[in-house]
Length: 198
Image (cartoon, rainbow, N blue to C red):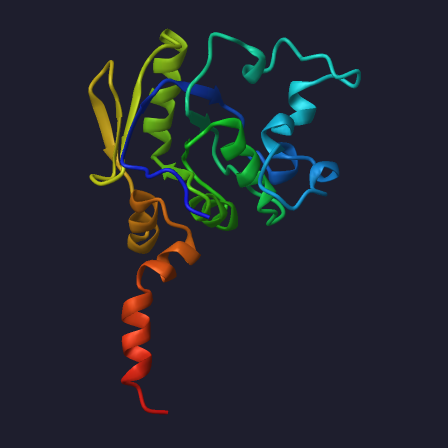
């Protein structure tokens, strides 16, 4: 399944300065019955967003209209816990294209890149600066430049580089998942197979 191409994202951001956010908090296990990657955004952070009677919790950030955007900024160790792909599906389905943290669980990080979400790992110092910028102005823009591997706080001009696997970077820029990538090089695969002796 192809996804929107990711090159340069300029967006406001939603702050979630909580450490050790695990996949069960991102999408509780009781919502994992569906197999299609649709509708999970409705239950993103379900138990943090809603009371037992399904009324929104006013103090949770996703229920605060002053915060919006395609970037979610989380605390250290984001996406820990079980390896469920549904956590990445819920974040994507909600509308986030990028998650920023000072540390990601490896499986969550890979699941995210496989479906078109860019996880950007920054230093703890730069993460703190992002939180401060959003606190000062919820309309602060964050720029994420994937080709240059650079994240910037537009209002201050401060920026930091980030690392990403070259294969995953190419897929995100082209909007490919792993299957799309293979289809894209089908001619080369066929040629290789025809000239390879077994």
